[in-house]
Image (cartoon, rainbow, N blue to C red; front, side, top):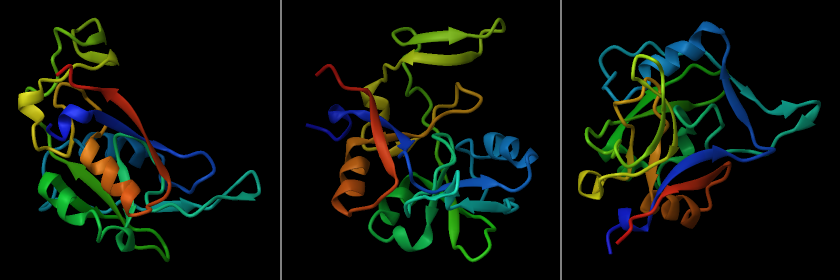
Length: 187
């Protein structure tokens, strides 16, 4: 059985764990546009970020992946050794500026032809672009052996993760993320 036949997941930030947001409001959109699966290694300008460790006066739990969103996963450098090799095969780590923290944002590669648009349940904009995907169907042959990816047919694609990535995350005791299964192979 292949890794993808066990499922494809999206990351979710766990309730009560650290968050990480851009200091400047306009950088939310910069991240949406630039963390798109196309390499930025030669043109990335690090974004200034703020690690949010308290919410409503209550301390938040330590996170190996302080939450911003499913489209832009942030990691502490010291948390990466156990999963770095897998992630490096599928994308790139880009530096962030965050006072007193060594954080990176992950830009996974795109997989053309991953999404089976005809079989997925998709809500579209009037111009035909994808607004929302209610139910995902993937072409398993196109994502075989890919542990982390984005789909190019969405302006802001979430990050998709293989069962293998989720298993490695859990095996290594990393904290701050949970995972929602969005697809399982019918085979």
